[in-house]
Image (cartoon, rainbow, N blue to C red; front, side):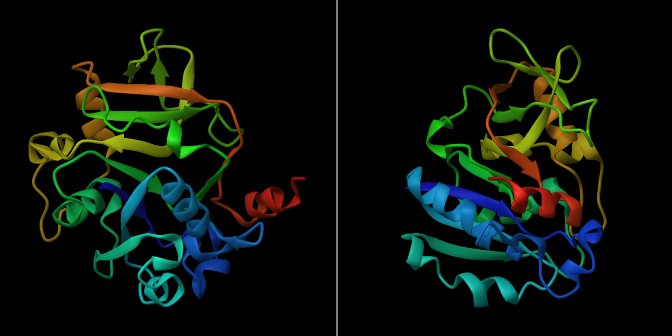
Length: 228
């Protein structure tokens, strides 16, 4: 059984007013909600169990997606509370539902024509990241990919993290040593944990050159809709 996590808890502040009444992953893009594009790709890649992180307007997700059976999936919902827990805290919150094997994680607010079947079933290290060319709104990129397929925090050329990756649960071990203690539900980004793993050559990656959009603003949503 292959598992996956979809990050869908964010408030989508930059997409307002569209996200005042609809969570960003449920906004319609090219005929169907963003998150449905992901569910279809995950099902095609052999995933049969998906955890959806929720917070903002959380009740709309089960109403729209149900139990996942229409895609041949089983969907579980991991509620983060009224305040989203960021990517790292959200992943930590979902781990009890995800189990002990590697899983795919996808940001709920991106659109891509990437084939998820190309993702490794298991990363060679703690994580495998799908990287893309730097978009105009993020020209500096995030990480560097070397010729051996390892991802580094420093180096050139720089590429942007797509929001798609495969992770081992062990990436979250020792999170307090990296991000410090957190009061209440732990709220922290995943990037510091990834950078700590990169320092030990434990993050691999691949460069995806197809279509990819961070649907972060109404303008980008409109541009995506206008593509042929």
